[in-house]
Image (cartoon, rainbow, N blue to C red):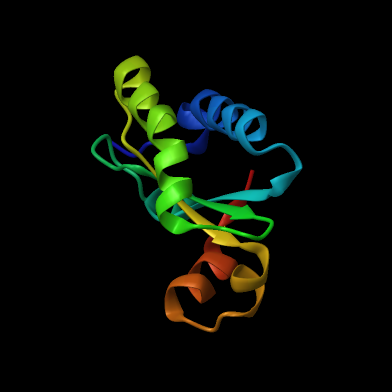
Length: 109
């Protein structure tokens, strides 16, 4: 069974609201990528998100800040959510396959 964006839209909306509360205007954009963005998600697929933030970004610190939100999604929605923080500059300028794929197939929320 394929999971559509419609199925996870309420969860995505909640995540975006929580991140906006956490980061305010530091959150530049939130991008869905991976199997959900490609329309290939199944019931076991996790939700992959890239949080583009204004500098400075400490990967370890940002992941720590987001951990409560990730736990909440597991407990309340039975959904595993992966959120990767990145600076606005790195997202737009780094030329690595991972980011090229997100820029190509990602869906901005």
